[in-house]
Image 1 (cartoon, rainbow, N blue to C red):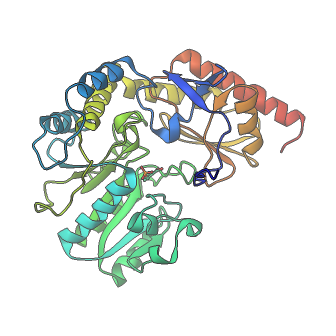
Image 2: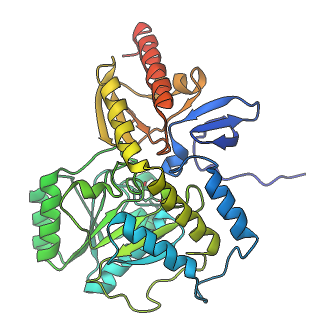
Image 3: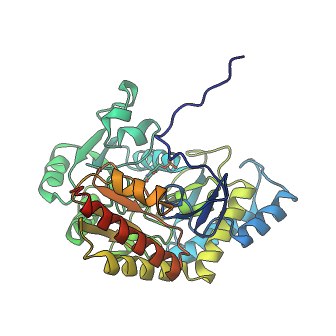
Length: 386
Ligand SMILES: Cc1ncc(COP(=O)(O)O)c(C=O)c1O
């Protein structure tokens, strides 16, 4: 008998988590793992949060889903809470299902708004795997012929001169930038560049889109990572942490942009279960002070590991941390996983480990990670992995 095979999406970790609670995963044999990857930065309030379980179960017994053909007061409730917690209550909200979908709609909206079609993005960017989002992603290996377009222009982070020269030559609809580049290995634009982006987009009737899909939702200690600077983007995209695993994405739209009805749409976006997940996540982030926790936990890790051998640089903010080593991280990551039972993330930069735990990590979890990393690096030094 022929059995349907799965498409190989990733080079997978062989462990299969079948149960999860808080910051911990349990495999088929009941072995416990510390989750410092959070399923690609998706788990914001911790696995199997009791309130999320309770609220989703309750909603499931009422109505699980209806499309945007009908009014759904849960969407209004979610938007209100999001506006308050993020500080963007004057913006409007388009609800969809993933990060790539949010970015597609953000770029489309910018083009609808100013009638222009070129988008500037940055080396190292990851904006998703659908059509235009993939064209805007700096990885030729995953970009097919049909995804290539002259409408996307790549430039370098922090290079004001190059950006200036592109604006001088082209009609630019939008500049799209990650709050902090995640997949590239936790890399950021500096304050001066953020100020420049704000100025140049404004002067040229272009839209500033900030992709906060990985860096947003409290992960860096503020609701949005760009809030560390004096910038208010025209469009902000979010996804990952929004539903703590329930698929959600969204676009926050400045009041200066006037989208018309039916310009954007989605069948599943803003369904009842999604909204309940979103509302619960926001309530928990606020009630359990998870942004403060993310900020303090990130500082604690960075401070404790800064003098560890083999570490070259620590980047990022809060619980979006990139640890760059002097050599490939594969061995370090394998030891952390197999010997110390800790999940961590890789990045395009082979020397950088990505640390993206749920925002409710406790001091004891941090200590476990730090001690395990210390022992791992000492064992690597002894076996001369440098
Ligand atoms: C910054 C950023 N933008 C967009 C995406 C795409 O999100 P999704 O996989 O939900 O389509 C990702 C996913 O890793 C991301 O990190």
